[in-house]
Image (cartoon, rainbow over all chains, first blue to last red; front, side):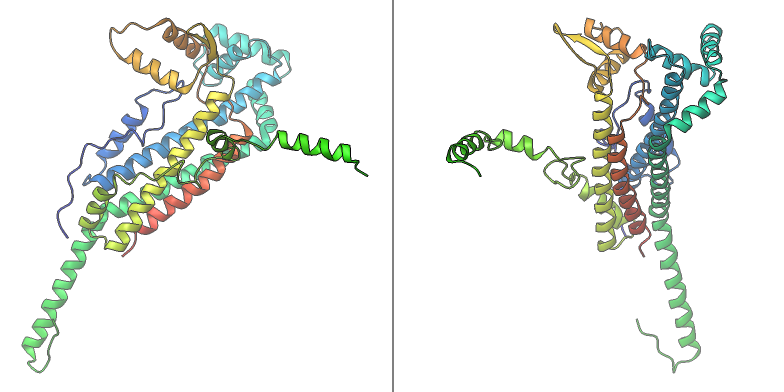
Length: 193
Length: 179
């Protein structure tokens, strides 16, 4: 076993998912740097696995947003606001996420109430309509989560490998010493190697 | 029964459409049924440039030659699937009702490449943003967001790809745990 390669400056361009509208362009790099801080001994192998882990986390977050967008779209459609749908979608999204100003929130609540819903009941209705498509996106989220778990496990294993090898070497050394001590006590016993 | 005249007409009509003739046309039609390109090495080849560095690192960490090869190949394979995944998602995003912009006098749809370009521009302090850039920024402000609804076809293709992703991630984990 030789020494582990020092951490190089990894070219992340092929690992970085293209930033999507509404996302911070530096989100991947920030997440990657944060994850790299947790590495005990950064090297090309662990850095690449970490970049893949960061990408999987970004995809997981994106699909969560896809799921929410699907529900919001169905909420807007159920409220029959086809007119200026994009504007209403933003207003609904901001209201559901609690960052809408009071005027926007009041407008959304008025429309929802006029259809005989509350925001919560409309959201449940929209979730029920989304049905099959929602199951598809939830599958994507679930599988990305499993990929994240596998990559985390891999990083831990790769990180621990030198320690495992060192422990094995020490155990072999200890066993050899014990065997030699035995032969020393009893000259009739011979130890190979 | 088909008359001689009809037979001749059928032959004449049949000869008119024999599919693409040029190499470019043949290549284009060969891509018609392509979903994510993972099965064709010419479309998404594995990038082997990192392999020597990764192999050296794996060996230095104590993996034997066989386990190191398996680990590194799985990592590169996983990367290939990730790139295909990203490509499918971007293609979908470019197709799902993106706002129009006027570019060089022509009206066209906003694409992910445009958005990346605008972000790069807006990140450069003191840079002048072109009229197209301003339109793109306005389109982004108008609510073109991540999470606009994915099409059913894209969800299906992504699910297929995620099976590959999960498999390659499991292969990496298995190789990393090898004694």
